[in-house]
Length: 299
Ligand code: GUN
Image 1: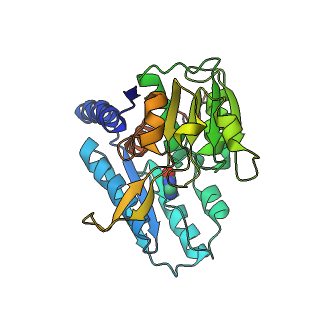
Image 2: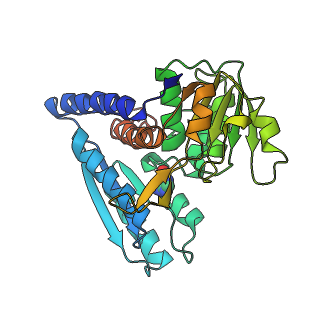
Image 3: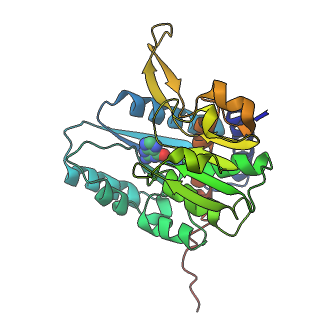
């Protein structure tokens, strides 16, 4: 059994990014700059956004954190996004989710310029990903694909069962694993809340991606031997023995599942740090105009 070490792999990726930033600096190029918008006081969201800003500092990016109160109106938020869209110095924009109920996530997502949508949530980027065109790919699925690639986990011809059909993880994972690429070329089953007998599917799986947000959902009796398991869950579960009062629990019951695995991601230290590294990578691509070249003007 091999642990897919997201912490170590993400540190390698961050080093590669930091080195590229140094090279950009030395030739006087554009230093990548990420703007993060945080609405309200949600504890988990504050932690995530603070980590993203810290990551930017670690690799030499510029960063801007915009904090707005939970009572901000939808129009005010859209106006803020527009301002950042127009700011030439900012390469990537993320609006941390979830948003308060009175604000439409769809409207806000669609407001971000696709060229700066380093979360890969804009319909243009989702569409480009589905068609296999260069696109920003949402950070969690992208981080998982990197982990599979760097550990050379065989995916071609394998049966991949994904549990959870969220816009952010399950749905894009299903597209990426099925597409004609390496990693990819898997046969994909996407399970969700209406799936009958999830265990019957997971028992057939060579690869399981658990992304449903239910701590300990996937147990050892639900997988076959030699499986690869990717645990996307990071639920905060009260734990008085921890200084911060909670523990992070994955969707996988590691104790019973790990002994049956060829590869497995731990929680913490698996998918989480890979997500953070993937966001930095997307921001670097934006600063380099990798996906959206400026219009070629021909005389
Ligand atoms: N909330 C949970 N995950 C994410 C993410 O990847 N991006 C944003 N913007 N919000 C999130």
